[in-house]
Length: 252
Length: 252
Image (tube, rainbow over all chains, first blue to last red; front, side, top):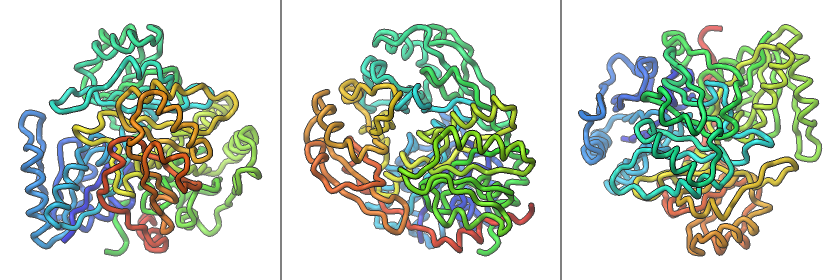
């Protein structure tokens, strides 16, 4: 009857919202992509249908097919949960899915999730803002997809705040070059967090001058700015079964 | 024994994370500010001590006193939850509290929360990024506190992405002026969301030229950019008691 576009955060099952956990536990159909952690999927009912629409970057279904699938499932009568890594509206293409559902007259809701742009740096001890250090942060994709509007990296360098780059591993040398061209200091601290909040989390600390050659691999969140020098604790990953127990609603 | 710096999102109790709900429900002491919703506080144990450190802007305790209080409580032996509206590291001064705890040798953890910067626009149907429309978003405070580094609004106008202004109601005319000076079109869409995700949520849609004179009141999240013209659904607020039931852990 309703399609819920649900953000499920950076992967740790305890970083689901209470609403997300409730919707997943009661859904008839769960549609998910490859960025959704196994601890999250474990919350679905045994009888719920699970549809994986994005096993690997090359093999993932086209957005048009996913939109059509959601419309069809929404018309089918059950409660449909469309799980997305992070937040549906932060490079999650949730807007496109919402538009397709609205155009087809299928009721939908949007449930914000913890965005990796903020939580993954935090999991490595880096606050994206800090009093006296950063009065703004910009979240930007390094992924230059066709039709994506251009980013003025030189202007971004002059804004004076933290820069958080998602999906920027491949382009990191070019991005660093343009930020340097915009006037950022080569010694500007950089913190790259790989597999953030998971048991495989690891962190590379470097400078803007060193970013291009640094050993950074996907999936990574790259923080550029003075805050990237801070080191305020490390996230303790949740054991999935415990999270599942905790998240199970006590009523339907 | 441990102080947990916990983000609790924009106010709706179902936008707590599962970890936040678990920590609140088992805490010995809950320290909170005025931005934390009553549905969230209702999750604390009846026997838990509740300390309100920020009833109103003028009457709130100084950050130095709050830091000292957290250190003292952390040394006291119980589990302490420091609740913060939104995310602790998005203008939440969580970094300062983490530093004070680290300096005093008090163990602490940081639990990211749903930031209003993303979730409040979403609650009014506005995605902060949208394919082909916005490849970045900048979250910036309009609050010009002493010691805060300057924001180059003219440079920000040239970046080409979405701008989300928090705590910018009082300065909105000056901010609009500077963004116009940086080259943003006067017809750039603006969406201001007041009391986002609550039952009192209301939305004002205007343009950058109209922002200064628009009827915008605190607390508001102001979105500036092409995405602000989108209207993809509205958040359904959670009734607090139901959320409390759902969030109660089934084991300690």
